[in-house]
Length: 120
Image (cartoon, rainbow, N blue to C red; front, side):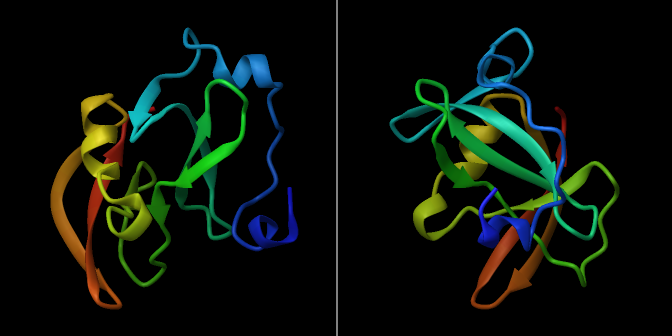
């Protein structure tokens, strides 16, 4: 884990590449042109973080979530970053059955993000 990510994510046992990408164990999601596995982690404050990992080569594609520590969330809830380079993320995760909408949104900077329930 590089220094940047270690500031945001708790260190957890890392599965081997086969375990991470095995579609029997993990749901896959199509995001833009990449078939991705979901790597469920936690931010340093214990909140759910979701990363998309390329199913072919294991390279990171995107961080699907944004950590808003001042907003209330249940243990299985998080906020999805669906803007900028992540445009289309919410719809891709919904379609793959990774998340479901809660109907709640929050402002962060100049954008609004959607709170979701994580199903994986």
